[in-house]
Amino acid sequence: MQITPLKETQCPKIHRPTTPPDTETRDPEATEEPSREALEIERLNALIADKDTELNGMRHQIDFAVGRYRIALMVSAPELPEELISGNTIEELDNAMDSAKKIVEKVASRIGARTPEKRVPSGAPARRETDLSGLSAREKIMYAINKS
Image (tube, rainbow, N blue to C red; front, side):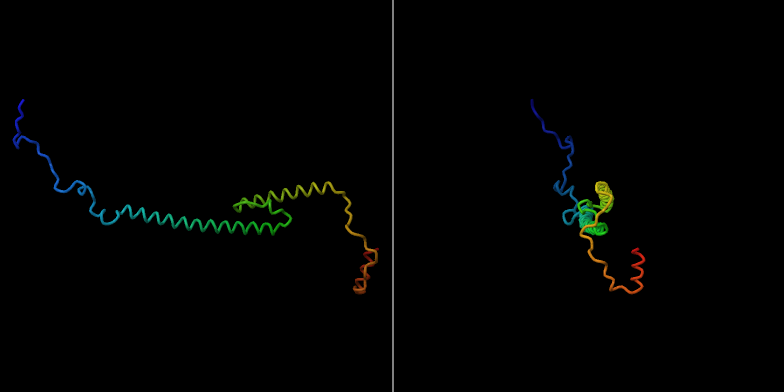
């Protein structure tokens, strides 16, 4: 079999670009500076970082305020054990305060039920009469009336 060359008019035309293929699809601005989308993404990431820093600062302030509130609760009710008042939010502290009050009341009522009704004062009774030398005449009379 013999192959005969084709004439130029019989060949299909092939388009050959005059520029290299890698530069044909590239944006000429992309090589010099970032695109608008990249700048927007960078701006938004910086904004997110600023907001995260601000949020962390606010969380620290809230934690400090909750700690101060806990201290105020403990000062306002010294009869409650401070171990019973715990929480990370104001609502949790309020709930813990209510629970602690209930526990202390329950324990006090149980202890009160076990002790005898008649309470005996501690210490020895006074061996002498009350010293009336510092009282005025009127106060002495009132004392004598109330004593009898």
